[in-house]
Length: 157
Image (cartoon, rainbow, N blue to C red):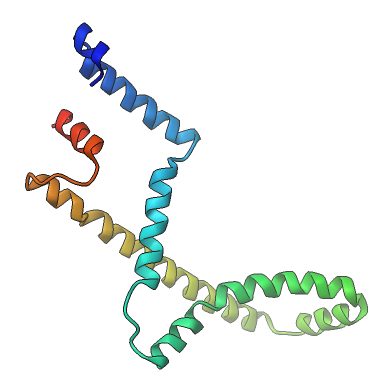
């Protein structure tokens, strides 16, 4: 609480208004500190673990390939169409002969792959939100590394 807030006796009201303004501002402009912390946690969980061997590393590398391959392949199709339109149109006519059932099967496989992957990550994020190490330290009376956050938590109890 600031000095002026103490003098006027409106410290808690000012803090509540400040918190409300911060929450509204985050609707329009993302909180960069929170975004950096989330990105750091994501990278640490993905790349920070111990290596389990060459085969596991190879499989992990393969698991990271589908999205970039699909994105770059789509861009590659546009480049191919610009470089050799005649050959591109012949290939597209060939794709037109593929039966609808095969297209449905391909769509189902891609949808299930990305859907299952997204569901896996959503469940992991949900579990991480439930169990935050700092929340236990604060409940136990221990302070975190951020003095301002500790003070704010103390005011909001």
